[in-house]
Image (cartoon, rainbow, N blue to C red; front, side):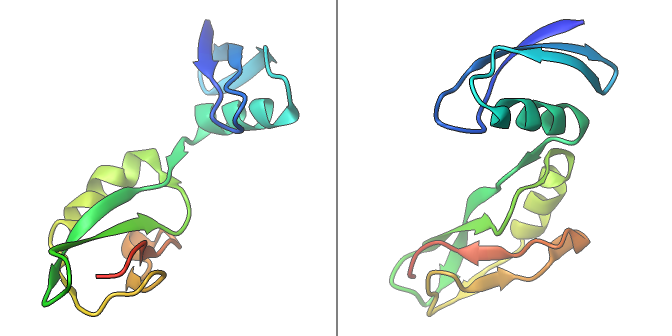
Length: 117
């Protein structure tokens, strides 16, 4: 089966034409750099995303603090991770880079603050 994807591996946003059989990439065309082929092969086999969300803050300058995963997490685990984060309330003060949650779900990823609160 042939499908088209827009590469998010670099700022070029190439339109990739990809021939796929199951979770195997048979061919890739349209990429202007090698990043595109590497990205689409990973995207087909095991898609990952960086998680960005906000959490409530207790006694802080702001009511919420933005957080993100320290590295991309498997896309299929994001709903489960969001369920855990829905029960988290952060105690102020919060600083950029603070680890809010260490290694949830054993994913070898931390949830870190991206602003002061």
